[in-house]
Image (cartoon, rainbow, N blue to C red; front, side, top):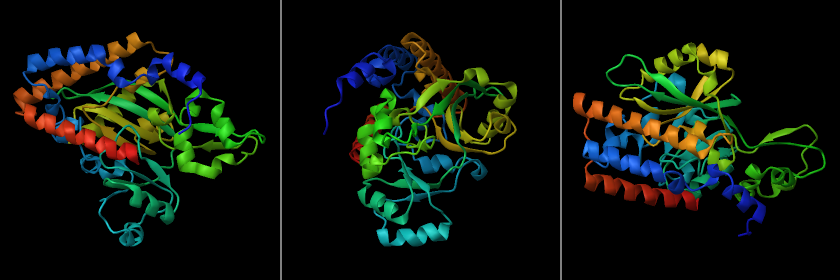
Length: 350
């Protein structure tokens, strides 16, 4: 494995958004302990979204979460088990009506890891043979804009609210007719950090010279860990948008806290409930990812994380007391965390 250039190491050290989350979350762990003592449960988050396994904190199936959402709001999706015979895949794709390109991603995911755009059946075969985990295939969403909308609703209140919103700029390069795609990637530190992963996926294609003015999206999904730039767009929150998101979320049984990642054509159409698709819905483990805007300080991030873990605690307590939603006991909680770490290792090996 090639050694990372020093300037990239320095870039990551001087930009807190790249720091390990274990470091960023140190003050939040203390707040978590405080709320755990108040709730008398280390795993109080289990009650925040009663319809989602573990509240959506660990080991929740994306397919089961999609099944809670009205189908018109998300792309056609199919679960492929890791033990499925490769010979049956082609017929399944045809019968289900999928068309290439499509998206493949782990059913129990990890921050965008092992998510790939699949252009052919040969590529799908390769993905399937390599995957040591169940995964989903989805129709490719044609909209070019993506936002993350954090939604909160107290169970004893009729309406929810948007507590933060982020726009996502994917990893795109623009050709100059001289440099190769790899060289264009190296011009931006945020992109250069992703080069080893891109080399694994694109291989020799990165040596191609991109024509002048041609734009190439190398990661067609807005994952911060895969090179996307996050921009705080909370200023775009309006009453109309809040009402639309609230209308959607109230149709998802047992969902009170989390982030919707949405692809859309325009904000105006999204406000009107037109031309958009939900990429994913994340529950208790959701981060208010607008904190990762490069213009925000670490202190801003801590304040927002503390605000949202407070929502998490308060909603869980209400569901526990009024709706009899159970907390996860210590033994089961530890078991779920162990399974989570095992699953993570499988995905990271991909």
